[in-house]
Length: 154
Image (cartoon, rainbow, N blue to C red; front, side, top):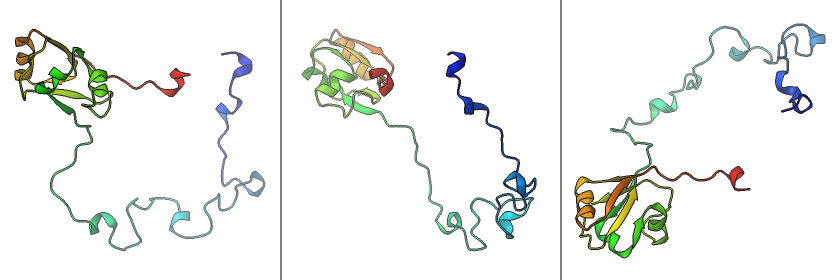
């Protein structure tokens, strides 16, 4: 970065309010006239609705919670025979087994493995790993593929 490329507005001075009419934001200092919001001191609670029963109290308290962690897509050992060579997120997506190549995929033991396959996925059950090894293949845990940002693709 060069001196002439610096952003001039990066150190913009904050506007001092309530310092007279000539300063631009004098008297009420941008707060309007009167009322609870114009006063100094404690502010209203973000959920406060003027004395009315707030929305968070009106809604029922439901049991449990929902996890925000994205769920792993399951791939069964019986589906591996339709693929050949290395099995990874991209080969599973191209075969139509997973919805996206960028999701976490877990290999679950359901069905037999007859072909040798080198499996490179994020997770697998112990019994699924044993089935793959028994067929002559191998399992390697890998990270989930990251999407390329749009700035890198140009």
